[in-house]
Length: 68
Image (cartoon, rainbow, N blue to C red):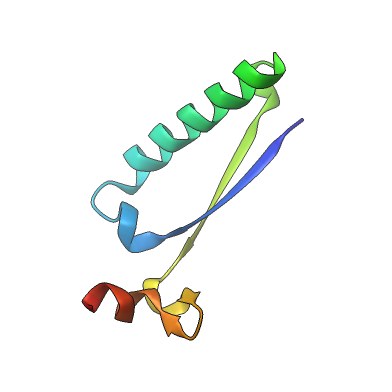
């Protein structure tokens, strides 16, 4: 049973977290089903939301990078 753990900057989905997560999960599940022949009940998707100030690219946090 595939287990997909998606870590995402929570500000990216802030406008509609439930809707965006549902859309991502639907598409990820469909891709795995297509590649493996498994059913949607065999695919697990979990989201972990991380604040932009807690997500770093190298030595700089994403919040700072977005401010430019």
